[in-house]
Amino acid sequence: MKRRNFVTRTALGSLSLLIGAEVVFADTMPKGYRPLAIQDPDPFKMFNKDKGMEVLNDKPWNIEAKAHLLDDKITPNSSMFIRNNGLIPENIDASTWTLTIDGESANESKTYSLAELKTKFRQYTYQLTLECGGNGRSEFDPPAKGNQWTVGAVSCANWTGIRLRDVLEDVGIKSDAVYIGYHAADVHLSRDPQKEPISRGAPMPKAMQDETLIAFKMNGKDIPLAHGYPLRLVAGGWPASVSGKWLTRISVRNIVHDGTKMTGTAYRVPCNPVAPGEKVKDEDMCIIESMPVKSLITYPKTGATIKEGKSLNIRGHAWAGELEVSKMEYSIDFGSTWSDCDLEQPTNRLAWQHFSANVDFPKKGYYEVWARAMDSQGISQPMLLPGWNPKGYLNNACHRIAIKVV
Ligand SMILES: Nc1nc2c(c(=O)[nH]1)N[C@H]1C(S)=C(S)[C@@H](COP(=O)(O)O)O[C@H]1N2
Ligand SMILES: [Mo]
Image (cartoon, rainbow, N blue to C red; front, side):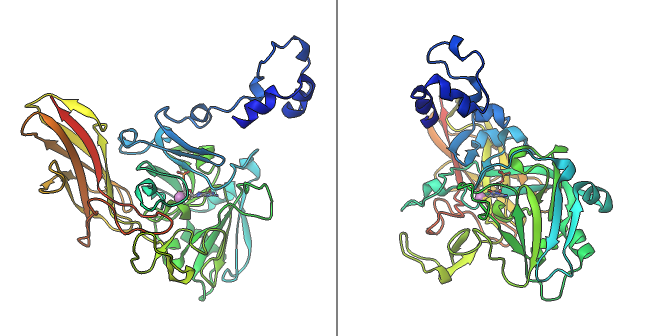
């Protein structure tokens, strides 16, 4: 918007300055015309996203899905949420891209080309659930600052790459290693090259898991630019902020990684529950690790209408961080009674699980279908809101859809 006003206030002569080249036929350009080169980009075209996605922010780009757009068992790029903390790197050349492993607890600093990573190490494919720690933030009260995600900041695509563990073992890790921290090629909003938009990581046991990948493919193709082309870390089941996009370096640390958004209150919740709105000291905030149990009804779309006497087939996905989902239920009476859904096994650890159920309604009228998952340790989703926290993380309340029987 700002840009548009700026252009109309700009004399034709300085257009070339904005475009970066002389507008040769500037004098024949229709009055008030906005050259294509400086039109606001269409994010749906630019990122190949479904038009039903919601743009929450354009600087940086943050775009979320709607529940019904996540109906596929394997999330396609077209409905995968985008969460950026900075600016997407420009002019990426995969042929010269490298990954460096370094840090106090690495035996040496070693740099690999992309081609080397692909040929030297065995490749694996896993379907992995990536949910933003702030998914569901919009429901908290008092509200938390940040992108107001509703339910659509979650995905479960197939990722192909090499095991982080294999690369770390190739470099050699000292016995005092406690954490890995990633560094990436995206640009801080200030464009200050000294600042990183985000540099998070994970403790060694998570880094060494079979499913923790340095990935170069998503759903069998090059990773889309917005999702980390040409190389990204993927650590399913943990806040997706651990899965660094546009990966250039991994440091093996002898302390808990202290990069941007690892410290202070970022991606942390109170170690002990607090009252809504309560101030929490930094030292009383704990780093989020495995994500809590959660589920999403992806069919039908909320607001659907069905004919009296017909049963409704609902379906969706459920996930539980490092754990499996052991039980899936639905309710049509605001949580008073619950019935079982059919629940499938995950394709692999850390992939979401599909559920379905045939729902019958007693008579005409307005209903809500609520869905509730339970993890393998017997913990269920809260019906409405879980514990309030200052930054609005980990809202794993039951998903609810409205249904009219006519
Ligand atoms: N380099 C880099 N990696 C990043 C981010 C980022 O801004 N820069 N955002 C993180 C956050 S907070 C999330 S939730 C996920 C989102 O992944 P997606 O955009 O591929 O869905 O990427 C993570 N990895
Ligand atoms: Mo995130």
